[in-house]
Length: 384
Image (cartoon, rainbow, N blue to C red; front, side, top):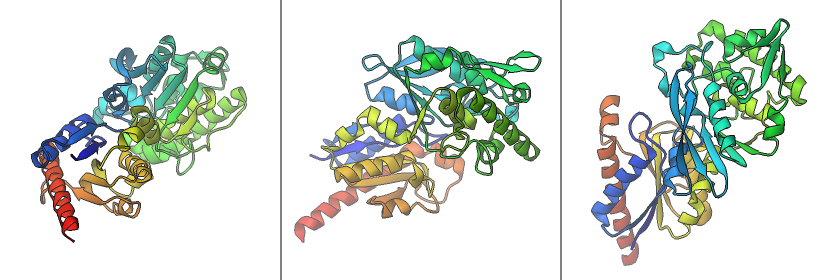
């Protein structure tokens, strides 16, 4: 009996990771009806991380009242493990770019305040470890909105400042973390991310990610300087300067705020998710692993979910097939790292809209074909 672990990421704008699992399983069962399929939806710390942990059965979903990047009320989701008192807060659940229409994106007014509200909820539940999934944010406020929600006070020469967005950073000259740092000193904070950019400079949060969040060319240098100034203000208060640390530029600088004030440690997001869902244990009895994501290219091997699955499977000695909505330049790096195959799921030249609409059908067909090839290969080996 064939034993398959299905551990894909989502196919963005098309299918969630859970839906990808179901599509792959449908294709498998057309060839091997009695196959044992273990579904483990994956994520890399960004969007879909809450869903991945909840799908594992070790966490359950908690709804939290929060605000999006435009300070509109919304219901965010936290993954909560009450036995181990672990909470995963996904930045994208609160201030995700997906909740803001392109015409409404404004780097100067977008706030991470809602992330702080989710973190407060995690503390109220009694979390002793908080995983902060960094990715997919609509903000570039260096985490000032998040810190404000947590209770960090900010001051100008004229008095206290309500600093929730980048426009407010102009006035901030001093911060006070009294109480906040004491509370969080007893909580293990993990910044889960595949983004290793610093906060400032040519590779910083603003210059690299600002344009997709509504920053005009003339905004980039101005905001970068504001981030640099805010980082110095924070360093003066907390006694450490983390602006150049890898991951500080994640999620518009929310990574910086977590590292600076909450004492977070950066861990690759895919490793965090893999550990929490029990991927290594599932691989111990697997014959093959199916993984994938919407676009597989050079970026995939730099910390994305399929790369993490491949690394874990390689350790376990299990072959891996990677399915891709799009195979881009650099995808062959996964083959060099041990993947058995990288397979495009689109059957021929089609437009993006059609590819997205037919993703479920195409994934099932690709999985079916992969299983038929594996079956044929096994037969050839037996006859050789």
